[in-house]
Image 1 (tube, protein in one colour):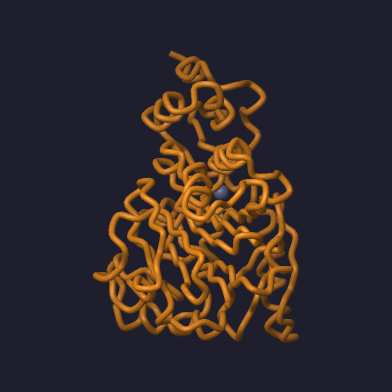
Image 2 (tube, rainbow, N blue to C red):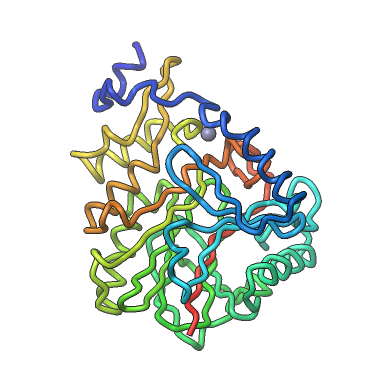
Length: 324
Ligand SMILES: [Zn+2]
């Protein structure tokens, strides 16, 4: 059977829009910009990506990114790490922040320290959720501050979403293809960080984050700003029928927009479109949403990709913190 007929709910218009490596066009530009930034010591270098903007913050060999949209809020730190500038050895090179991937623990703690020092936060404030591809969201209290910062055991178990209104708690999620989704309500002064893998997205993690922010702190969706980190893009995220079926079951009216049929008959998941739809359906304003638009699998020079590196790799992180 022609594979095109296997997935009747794929629309023609979505087919062939992306092909593997289609976002590699920006790769060389990115690297050149980084080299120039190091040489000329430019602290913040803006670069344009296909679907959005992120600010670049080179500090020696270390580089982290931040969302353009959050820049006006000086009460907020919201950054995404890259793999540049750490001490870990291959296949975890270099700034691996994950303690559960087989890397040397001392190196990981040193990487976390290096990263936090450059971002300007105290590692002891970092609170880590242990991701299980679920949708449990924890409202983080001051007594939970620092859990999982320097050891894996004390991290918050089974937690794919973190929310707090307490200044001085740094929320951290560790990823390698999934999205770290940052939420900020400047009116209620509430932050959140959600883990957007395919299972969490099927479970409605983005919508549940907005609901939980409303329930716990009376946040209104129209006030919330959202940043979506680099993650595996529609160019590279080949999936099988189980994933397509799960989305179709969860979102029967929308699933056709989340998949792209390739010329060879394979099907790619477009997580970015799926997450954007969830956010808009939650009442988030479109101009309050910023996608990094960077595919991790196309950019293993800058990020870790579980898929592209066949599971033997480290983790980069999305981090958000309110200042008092
Ligand atoms: Zn890609």
